Amino acid sequence: LKTTDDILTKDAHLIQSFANLDALKQNDARTAIVGAEGIHVTDSEGNKLIDGIGGLWCVNVGHGRREIIDAITEQLNTLDYYSTFYNFTHPAAAALADKLASLAPGNLNRVYFGNSGSVANDSAIRMLHHYNNRLGRPNKKKILSRMGAYHGSTHLAMAMTTPGYSEEWDTAADGLVHHLMEPCAYHQAEPGMSDAEFLDVLVEDMEKAIHDIGAENIACFIAEPIMGAGGVLVAPDGYHKRMREITAANDIKYIADEVVTAFGRLGAMFASEDVFGMQPDIINTAKGLTSGYQPLSATIISDEIYDVISEPGAMFLHGMTYSGHPAAAAAGLANIEILEREDIPGQVQVTGKIFENALRGLGDLDIVGDVRGSHFMMGLEFIKDKSTKTAFDADDNVGGKVAKHAQDRGLIARALGNSLILSPTLILDADNIASIEAILRDSISATMDDLKA
Ligand code: PLP
Image 1 (tube, helix red, strand yellow):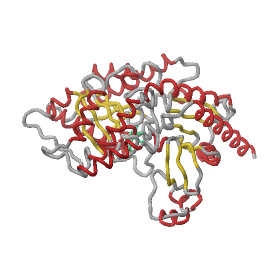
Image 2: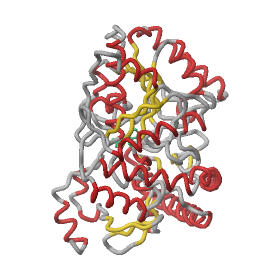
Image 3: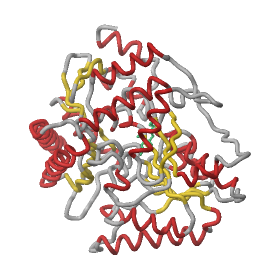
Image 4: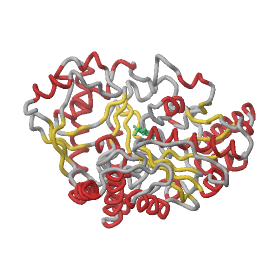
């Protein structure tokens, strides 16, 4: 497939994710990406674009890393596939599990591999069902999640995601999941409320849910350290620690969904402990685990949970053909080697802050209502009137307009209604960051002109 027309003709048979499929019937609504190197991708028209969303929050070490590609090829030449079912294992899955156990905080030492973040989250819940059944409390299976969350697109992961994602089928109605308040002060705090006061509101909401549902019926609380796809929503300082204390006191397991935040994006291998100062019972990761070079996820559980589900006589009845796929595990190992050797999390503590500050600087523009996030995980929320906090209409799609202008100027950013998300590769230098800032400033100004016209 050489030309854009060739690709888009065949693409009529491809169903894109989270897309307005009708709009995609117009060829010019689609972009075919045909190559990638470092911080850039190339489209089928030959345009070189800065990948401002790191593929999809995942290409942490940058595109085209020869070492990862070679590790995958070498693995396929040695052992193309074998499963980790029954009593089988293989060197790549074993080595990566060992590596993750050494990197994950505290007693999180046991790893179940899947092939997506959604599957990592579903697997964690299934493991907790096993755990609670072994402990003779089969009713302890309700899940506390949060408004604004995104945990994936399998049935269960979508039920844990904020209601409203899946218009035609609100899976949360199944009754398994209770959604706590969205923890983002910009949207939820009363005017004039301090961070500490807002945190008290969130704590009260959590305590009320536990009281109403009964701790004996609740298996877990699941939370992204910073909510990503919900619009980069940041909870007040101290939130995760407080929630950890409350869940621990009520014998409710804490699942940290680190599908986006792990492997350097916030300046640490895992954000839970190093950034937010708490140790969950389970960490789920995917995306940056292989920097997207292969599909792979990991559900990393505590020894305490593992000891129960591996008691004499217990059968772990969960499995996926590609769990720990050799090529994916090899990619994960090579990726982590790069992250460690180049100390990418350490670099991000510096460059990620430059990025964050550059984006915060855009807050002086009239329609930029809020700039949220941390390091290389940032969101801009556009607003009609800053002084009254009047929002744009949902179909104004200001994020889409800004993203289109940005792409025309050489930057891919992700539109999300009236917000824009930036989650670039983690190897940007100060000059790259200055270019991104300049493109965004121009693109937002051009959108302001469009809106006036
Ligand atoms: N959890 C979080 C926090 C995510 O951001 C995502 C995807 O964006 C997922 C889970 C689902 O991952 P996947 O798309 O690999 O199933």
